[in-house]
Image 1 (tube, helix red, strand yellow):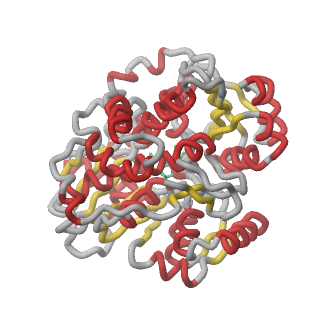
Image 2 (cartoon, rainbow, N blue to C red):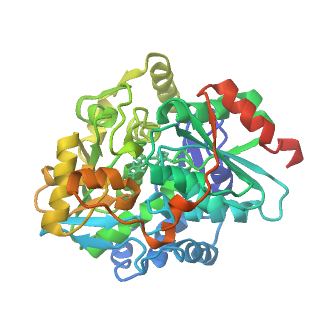
Length: 467
Ligand SMILES: Cc1ncc(COP(=O)(O)O)c(C=O)c1O
Ligand SMILES: N[C@@H](CCOP(=O)(O)O)C(=O)O
């Protein structure tokens, strides 16, 4: 499989190179040159397979030429062996139409583990036997950070510099990152929002001076391998609910558009998805983009669903590229315009292309709280605020009588205060992080400037010539 950049001006890479590269050298994002497809028979053949075996069937075409099926299977066994549920991502029924897909049974209790446990092993494999040293730079609104840190702490050949917006992640999220004291992990709290942190990460990749000095790599969903691993659970859930005979809708709590783009990939591969419901909190750039064609960056408002407090959604670029006829030159112009004015209109082709598959909704605080209460009182499920946003959108979506799967992206204990405020019950910390508040924390605080952050990293990272 070969990978091309959305901006059309970066080298075409194979799976190994694309995984290690992160962002493309022209500032774009990589995606497969063509979408592989699974036939109806192949999809039907997924029924009854374990999560690991499903993962092999779904991911094999993307890693072709780099990993054989046995190698892929071994990596999946190792990655998903660390999940605390035998089904890895179990489905839970809420009522006659609604289901939760629990994606939070990994080591750090959010859906990010599904991809990052796997990505950590890919890094290890691709670096082994080389003297290459990776400098991972990442931005997190709370969950990517802890999942990446868990996956990479203590590994040789890789350092992780993780930026989070100071005071804008939950205390559990922060401690899951800052209590990991491995020498290759650097947590940095910056003044600003997640968007500021993400912009700094992209600026590091786009600075020839800085990126020329280190082997930079990414763990955010700008890295294609992250999305690829997330495609699997759409197939896993849908076949359990009757695909390919019966279409299924998914409601996805959305910030950086990574998770829902993985759903789009599943649909392109042939999975009969009736609708992808893009659910945002009041930071609603994606809802405005999909419902009105208006992709303009508002000011980020802190909410009880902090991981979705995002107003520049990296992966939306991948969708715009695919819907706009894969024209890298035109997309570069469109993105350059957005870079300078912080606003853009979707083209007619992009709007028309998105309509059959996507719908969107913006959920405010009251509706989020109502969804949490409904889940708890009527369906006996305690859910986190991000999941509640998607469930609220699912319950008022108009998709006919197909089953609707709401992606449950985080364990409620990660957001104990918000859950308690809405439901009156305070979720206990699961055993695996039971002592989180007794652990020592370590992180540095920096202003959110390119100069401050790059100076910090340059002092600590391994230069390219040394590895
Ligand atoms: C718990 C949770 N839900 C939803 C999201 C949104 O996912 P995405 O950024 O892939 O749209 C995130 C973070 O991104 C998250 O951490
Ligand atoms: N919600 C994320 C934000 C980063 O998104 P990513 O999926 O691009 O890594 C987080 O929790 O960090």
